[in-house]
Structures are given as C-alpha cells and as structure tokens.
Image (tube, rainbow, N blue to C red; front, side, top):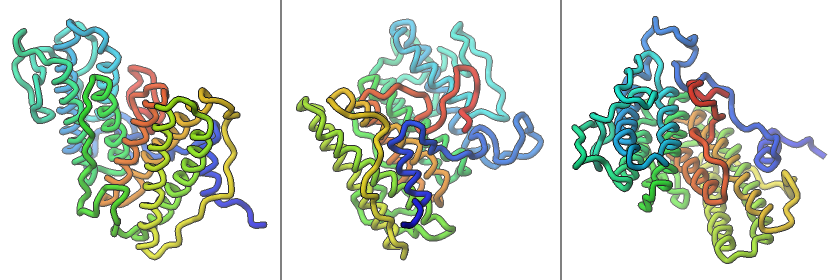
Length: 350
C-alpha cells in the first residue's frame, strides 16, 4: 500500500479539528522580507495599501457617524479598525478626533451613502448614514478590495481577500441582501465555479495549490454527505443540499482547470475521518460550520499561491465559505481564513 500523500493529509485536516491549513507566509501588513518597523526601503504595495487604507478610513468615519444612534454596531466597527491596523505599515495612523479611541476615524468625514470607497463627505445630522447605507458601503468597499488583487503582492492579496470577505459578512449583518458580485479576473476566464476555466494551472508550478484546493473540496463533499443525513429541520436540509451542490460545483471547476492545464486531478479518498461524532442535527450543524471555516483557510492560502489572473477564483471561494460558515453558526472573525489576533495587536500572523 502506498503511503498517504500530502494532499490526503490536507484534506483530512479539513475535517480534523487539529488540522493546520494556513500557510506561514510573511505577515500581510509589511512587504515580504521587510523587518517589522523597517520603512527604509520603498514598499511596492504602497499604492494598493493606500487605496485600501483610504477606503477603510471612510468606513470608520461612517461607523462613527452612526454609532451614537446604533451602539450595537460597535463590534463591527472594531473589526474595521483592526483591518486598518493590519493594512497599515509606513503610513502614520491619524489621531481620532472623536472619543472612540480607534484609528483613522472622524465623524465629520463620514461617507453618507453609495459613494466610491475612500471618498468622504461632510456629515450633518440630516445626512448621517443609515444602517442600510452603511451596509451598502461595506459591500462596495469589499468589492473594491478585490479589484486590487492583481496589483498586490501575494501576502497583501491574501489579506485583501480576507478583509473583503469580512466586509461582505458585515454587509449581511447590517441587513444587506444584495448578492456579492464575483471578483473580476484579470484577464478573464470566468470567476464562476460552474464556468469553464481556461487559465493555466501549471504555469509557475501552480497545479499543486489547485490540487490542494481540490482535495479540500473532496473532503467537504464527503462531510456534507454526513451533514445531510443527520439534519432534520427543513431549512437545514435545504441549506445542506445547497452547500453540497456548491462544493460539488467548485470541485468540478478545479478538476476542469487542472485537466485543461494537462494535469491529472487527484481523486477523492475512500473516506475521511470526522473531527467529532456526528449523531444528531446539532452536531451535524457544527460539522458544517467546521468544514466551511477550514475552507476559508484553504482559499485564503490559495489567493497567495496562484498567479494573479487566478486570484479571483480563490477570493470568491473564500467569500462563499465565509458566508456559509456564518449561516451554520460559526464564531465571527475579523479575518476570515487568517489566524485572528486580539484587538490592538495589529496584523494577523500565521
């Protein structure tokens, strides 16, 4: 019998609670190889980082304008402040003019409605943003972050994809029901998992990361077979069927991509070990949340591992798994797919 391959262990890690799937890359808040606090060399990511910081400052200002009427939004605002700390390196953090104690936010510069992320406008009591406008701004900002995936270094692209997914989660929490648009590839094969993908997966040795993603989807399909057999509520049954179909489509997309590049897609294993006994609807729901949370790590790493035209594929998969993890009751996180950090600690690090 042949020993299990690395990808078998990666797929098992998707199911086992102790599996570590996050790649150890340079911290996303600084240029690769640059020591922390060393700003003597130019940061090639500075234009992308500056745009991301400006957009984040607009979000912070909009939250600050709304918080007096909606203090329950403070946890979301704290997430955005942590995003800013993670994105910031050489740019000094402005001193807040309000008493919120969070970086880069002023109530007087709040963005009021569906303006371009990063733009600011004078805010008065009559033009203070509503929760609906803030939800729209979160969604638009999340989309804008994906537009810079191709211009960012691998580690910054990974962070942008994570923060974008967090923004979509915020928009949903704020009541935004509009579907998130798929990230635009550059150039474009379609970013849809059900469409034929013609980008080369073999260039630069990138077949291996897509094989890892395929292995993770094989494990997810297996896991959702268990989930579907244990849930009893009609809503959960529907959610399990929908998720299973989505993971089958994503699995098929990776298989087509690999086959189109001349690689042989790895087959699914005969079975996978579950992280805990799944005997009822409650444990089935925990398994679904676990599967989706692990997949966010897989796809955050994939964003950093593949050539820039293929980053949107991974970013879309990250966002979709983050949304499904929320649906199944996973604990919220400021950085989907990345190791979280305490408030004020700066950047999430592997």
